[in-house]
Image 1 (spheres, rainbow, N blue to C red):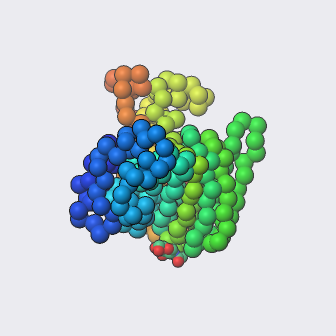
Image 2 (image 1 turned 90 degrees about the vertical axis):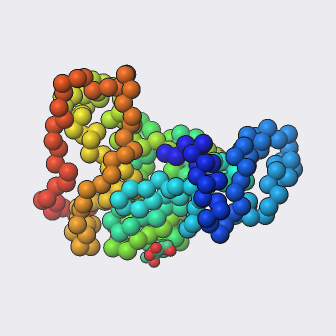
Length: 262
Ligand SMILES: *[C@@H]1O[C@H](CO)[C@@H](O)[C@H](O)[C@H]1NC(C)=O
C-alpha cells in the first residue's frame, strides 16, 4: 500500500495541478496528532477545503490493479480524520473484477453498494462459517475487524462501493501476497509440503488488487483475460528469500475449461 510519506509528498506535488484542496503542509499529521484538543486540530486546518476529499480526483495515488482501484481517505491522505477515529474508501470495480481477499488489521468495515451488485465473502475467524452475500445498490454489509473478506463485481458494467472504517488508519493486508511472502519453506510446509519451486511460481503470478475476477464472468461479459501487474507481492529480504538455484514452477494463469456456475 501507499506509504505515509509518499502520500504526503505526492499530495504536495500534485496539489497545485488539481482544482481541489490546497496543498497541506507536509508536517500536518504530526501537528494534528500533537494537538492538545479537537479545537486545536480544527485551527490547524484553516481552509474549509481541507474538509473535502474528492474520491473522483484524489491527490494521492490509488491502490490499483488491472480490474480497477480503491481510493482511500485516511490519516495520510485526508488529515481532517486525525483524532476522529474514522476513514472511508471508495472502490471502483470494473466489470468482472475483484478486490482480492484481505483483512483490515485495525478496523471493522461497513460496505455500501452504490450502483451495482457486489458479491462479498468473509470468514471472521477459526470456527466461524463462511458467509457470502450479494449486496445490491442501496444495501450494505459488514466485515468485522480482522475478518478475511473479498468483494467482486460479477456484472458486465463497472460498479462502485463505499466503505466506512472505524479507524483513521484501518490498514489493509492482502492475504495471498502476504501469505506467499512468508519464508518459502514455511509456505511449502503449510500447504502440505509442495515444493519451494511451486511457492516461487505462485508468488510470481499473484495479481495486484483490484484484479480480474472469475473466468465465468469474463466469458459472459466478453472480456479477454490479459496479463496483470504483480507489484503488490511481499518484498524479499533475507528471512523470506528463495534459496539460490531454485527456478519457479510455471502455474497455469487461468482455467480454460470453466463450466460450473456458482
Ligand atoms: C457506477 O458509478 C461509476 C462512477 O460514476 C461509473 O463509472 C459506473 O459506470 C457506474 N455503474 C453503473 C452500473 O451505473
